[in-house]
Image 1 (tube, one colour):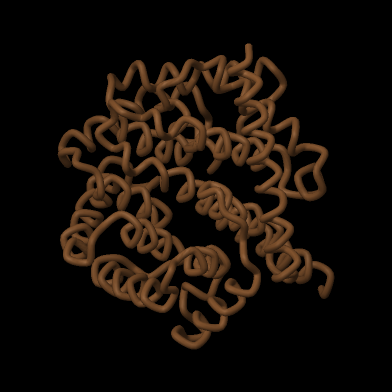
Image 2: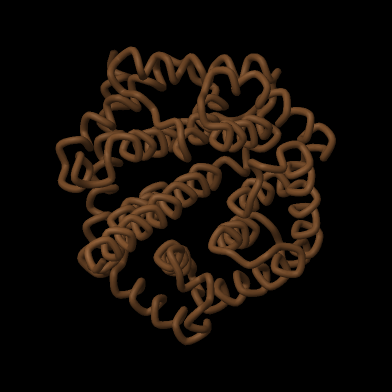
Length: 336
């Protein structure tokens, strides 16, 4: 009983830090999409750090100085990049790394906002001497994704391909495991694209595809039965990270629901903020932090610290793009 109380206190403190970081970023950068603020906050909170608005503004200026106006680093992913740079002891060196990796990726991919996410993942997880090899392996794995699902696979999958390329898993195993998970999950969830992303994440973990998929579905069902329906669009892939944790479904679900209930009444996390589904996704991301150190048996344990951030960033970028599209459509409708 005492252990559960400690866990709840720890989660509450993390929630408070998350809200505090969201407010720091929002107050310093007031004209960004409201979907971006919790994303940036999660980058700091997962590391147990408080955002520094002054350092972030310096990093924003550095990004402007080093990249052109139409650079993909200056689009929707700008604030995520600024946050990442501000976490580095040498923001300029970090930015040079990102630009170097992005340049290598552009030799084998079309440039996109999603490719900046892939560059960030490789920068965090690989040594400079590995950049070339990881870049080409990323493309190889992406090609396998495309061959299996030509109509589902697009630029947004490049960061998932980068995560898989950074693992020690065999390419053929990755392809087969992704497909096994996809086949098991597709009848259960409506969105083929979201199921594909979920299958990418589950392929990172050890154990049979059946057991991993069963746990993901059990967690989804438990949360839904208790009034917390997990999003089945871009949010769904975070369910994969949670399913790979060496913790039982009920314990995970209770922590997620506790965090969700704590965030719900907070300004910006209700119906007029990021909404229930993204809020529940961030509840999952904050819950993961307690269990990451326990990931001993997984071949890809080193990757899991960034998996949740990649997924959250994907979701925020997609949501922001959708919001921008809706605003443009509304403006067009008003002027006609």
